[in-house]
Length: 454
Ligand SMILES: *[C@@H]1O[C@H](CO)[C@@H](O)[C@H](O)[C@H]1NC(C)=O
Ligand SMILES: *[C@@H]1O[C@H](CO)[C@@H](O)[C@H](O)[C@H]1NC(C)=O
Image 1: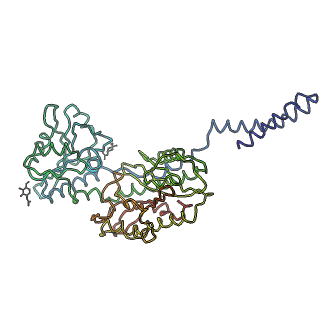
Image 2: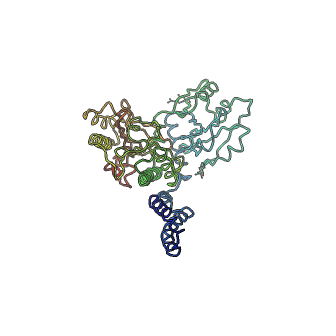
Image 3: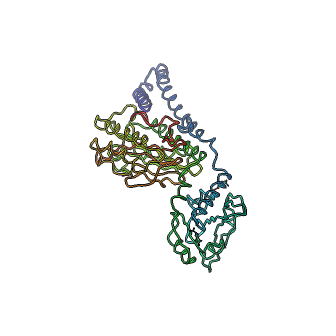
């Protein structure tokens, strides 16, 4: 388009002197004929500037529009399960700071209450009622001067939530321990609770044991419910659709930064919050977490895009390594792509309820080793995913975590040859009711089938 406009303008310029010559009339006709297309083309670009075509990512917004967030009854069920587990473990209380676990049990995310040096704590303690059922008692420890704001947090609960307050000149941990009478026995803290909070609790309850929450409690959040899986399926599907939509916009010569901007735009258009992406071309993809030289895409380069965002708090994570329709890769690089592709499938086959996480990692790694590429697969196979982008269980050598129904984790083998090429393919898996591994992205045709079909 640009070329033809300038060609017309050039010819207009060449012919202009003749217009000034004696035969004005004929010349005027010629000039008009020559100028009209130029005028037309310019008008066209003016029109498209004023009234742009539909943005290339608008279609993505519909994909997850019908998926509801987690509703109050699910929070109640989680709180009852936590109380029952605490009771079974003979623990007096579970404590978490705002973040993924507090979000899971009480809807207090790190976004709704930012961490500071002043503790705001979620406490859940079991209470055995007269008929023997175990019920949760819920407290939110709050700084006194922030009490009004703390009470505005939408904490879904069947019973009353109490808000013990600590004035600035009082030990917050003593207030917390006294409010629920949990100074004895075992206090379980969420794994992400900061050390000074743990120290403060230990000092306030010297006869209690303050321990990190054990696997029985971690699993409550690790193992996803049907409604969580519905959210995660949609988030991961639309992430694949976003990568495909961005691929349509790419061309030989595009820069990593431009593709990166498109990717972020597509994730936002898809309705995902906090979208982030890694876009690496050619040998830049050999550094698994990127180098950022803002390289231009060559005709024989793989494009590696690793990206995700969150839907109702649940994070997606997908990686595709692909070629553009007109680009090609060497036989060697295509062979590496296919190895990674098969390794990903091997891990899917190995994953099922009851196996240890390390054996899933080993299934993918074994293939890359026997092909002589073991040394280029430099990271673990995958990580659990949910309210956090990376959470337990981790799929790595040495892990004794047992895969169970409801677990969700990434399957992302890769080959990284520094200075030459990087290939990674990633889809997240969930373990279904029958104990089988299924891709969260299956609904949009995952796994990828070729470098030209991401
Ligand atoms: C959870 O909190 C969010 C705001 O952070 C709110 O929009 C949502 O309604 C809350 N959910 C429930 C079930 O209260
Ligand atoms: C349960 O914890 C209490 C302290 O809270 C302790 O006295 C009791 O012995 C524990 N029971 C068992 C069975 O461990």
